[in-house]
Image 1 (cartoon, rainbow, N blue to C red):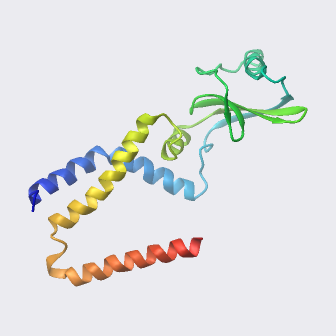
Image 2 (cartoon, rainbow, N blue to C red):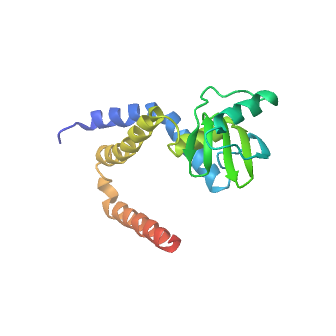
Image 3 (cartoon, one colour):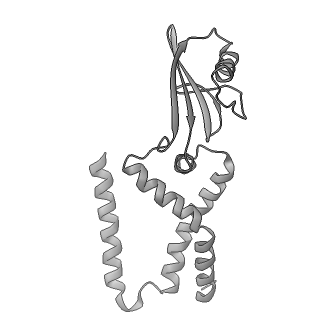
Length: 180
């Protein structure tokens, strides 16, 4: 064995402790998402119907609307084209514009911490959290590998362990197949 069991235990322990916050984010937001709590959960949302601005004048019109109506101007006022229209701001505070003919829908959203974490889970933030996410994914594989190594894959109950592992693969495969 290239790495001693003691070192596998240390790798397992320290990676587990380091990635504990990421695990909590993924577990809480994943469970919440399954039960219908999306990125707008707990958000303050304001929807307005406004005349559709001229092409190229969207940013100017949005900023004018925000100022005239006492809303905060986002730190990033650059408009970006998205699947749902145009958007400015950040994950925390965003303004979106959806053109719908003569009128447009302007949405101002101030997300809750949970909503921001859901977007982190979905890799919608900057690449900084993505580095943690990829590291966490790799660490999950190492957690299983190190756990199997320092238990020597259940020497006393190896056949039972293999049956349980096979059952896990079968159940997971059936759940995927039934879901498609």
